[in-house]
Structures are given as C-alpha cells and as structure tokens.
Image (cartoon, rainbow, N blue to C red; front, side, top):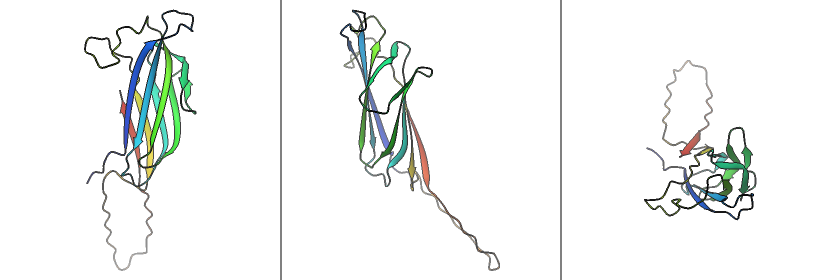
Amino acid sequence: KLRPIPLLVKSKVQVAAGDGSSGSSTSSKCRVGVKIRSNPENKQPLCRMSVIMSVPPDIRGESVKLSRRGGVWDGMKRIVAWQIEELAPGDLVEIQAQFEYLGNNSNGFNNNNGSDNKPLPKFPLLVRCDMEDSLLSDIDLETDVEADCKPVRLDLTRSVRILHRKV
C-alpha cells in the first residue's frame, strides 16, 4: 500500500523590465517564486529540508535578493540554497528570489502561458528532506524462534529520505 506524496513543490518564473539601476537602460528583473507544502496527511513533520535552485547562465546570480533569510548564493556552483529545519504537516513555505536578467529586455517573454512568446528562463529545483517514523510503503517483519535460541533484541527505526526534482 503506497502512501500519498509527502510534499508538493510549485515554482513560477516572471521576467519584467527593470529600472535601469544596474547601469543598463535595458536591464530586466527575473523573479522566481517557490512554494513547498507538506501534505496534511503526513504523520510527522518533514525535517532537515534543503532547497537547491540552479541559476541559468543568462541570470546574474550575485544580484540575488531573497525574501526568506538563510538563502546562500554559491557562485562556483551557480545555485541558491536554503536550509529549513522542519515543516509540519499541512504547513507551507514560500521563497522568492529576484535576479538581474542579462538578456536584452523582457519584451516577448511568456509570462502568461501564451503560445507565441519566447520561453522563460528555467530554474531547476531539488528539494531534499527526511521524514522520521514513517515509510512510503508498508513493511512486514516476521520472526521464527527455536526454543533453544538466545534472546535477540531488534530495534527498528523507520525513516525515509525524499528527493524531489523539478525542472
């Protein structure tokens, strides 16, 4: 018997004309919104969560402005990473990151799912977390003991590590 998916990850990218503050009159801003929701049916919170967002080459990563504390830009790997200690069942965490877009301008970007516009930049996400005292499927354990065997103690810990990738 499989359990429901423990978390839901959604992301949205928008590109808009900038104010020219970076020295270029054609500077654009790219905003990425990420929502992560823990399934309300989870029996335990999701813990030790890492959210890793890859930043494409046409985005100036060092210009990042984050809405949530704890995000770290790594220029060598071109990622922004957040650590979230715990997410209780049913809770939602929202993260926004704004970058300077290095393209010419924002005209023609597909912000509203139109079919004739050029595609938005892609920010692949990896969400990694642990869940204690829970499994995604059932497990049965049977033991047979002969009368002359020494007693054996068996301690079991149920846990699962979840890796969710969104491209």
